[in-house]
Image (cartoon, rainbow, N blue to C red; front, top):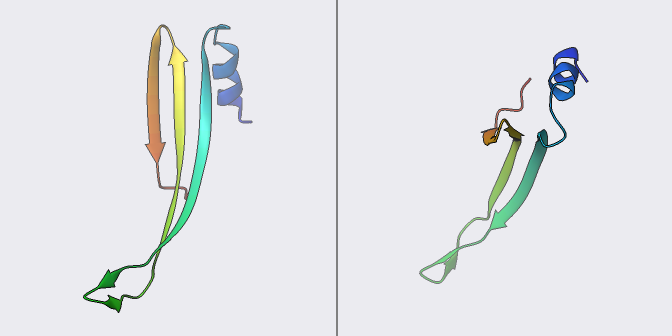
Length: 68
């Protein structure tokens, strides 16, 4: 854990906090048009979501850019 994350976590009260969620989903889709099977379509979705609740509010942030 980096130093700034540790400092931010230490500053939170017991009623405040944060969650980081990584999502990865793979799907395949088949379609039939006019009685003909189309080529399969493969879909990959990936991303990260952060949720923070502090000072009586809630904040959300999300990105699909995982190239850190």
